Length: 168
Image 1: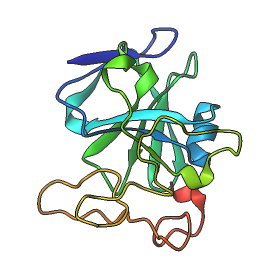
Image 2 (image 1 turned 120 degrees about the vertical axis):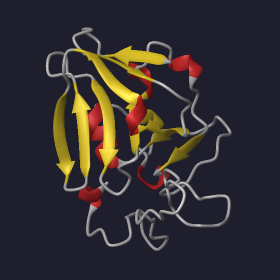
Image 3 (image 1 turned 90 degrees about the horizontal axis):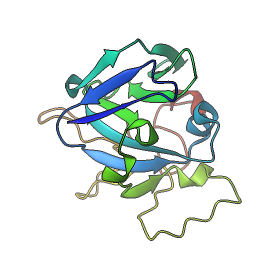
Image 4 (image 1 turned 90 degrees about the vertical axis):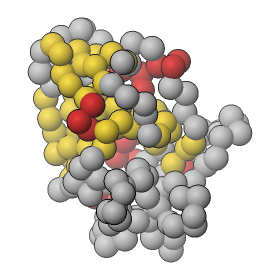
């Protein structure tokens, strides 16, 4: 069981189970949402996440994406994508123990700030993370029997079928 919350402690949450991914986003929209040069996240099954105190505010940053944050202090808390309803990304630094879930990769480095130097030897992907079987682009593995439509287009830095970055 892991717990976390916002800076002012008005919103608290807990998440059970083990994370399915832990990485660092460098995409433009995540940087804007966090007002930071990059955004570390850890992914869990959505049914293992629960708010235990207060209530987060939700913001639809693009048609498929809902981000949550504290309405009092503004701390970013989570990210959900409609194409992956079984997953929730928790902002790593909102956890009480962010050291317990170190990042294992970087994604969307094609959009990283020019003055950021990645020197930690973690895998770094131009868009989304490549799957071990050579499948392109799934950030979160789908549940058994379901393929995720969220696939990176290797010819550019956008999702297949996306016309702009607002769909990230």
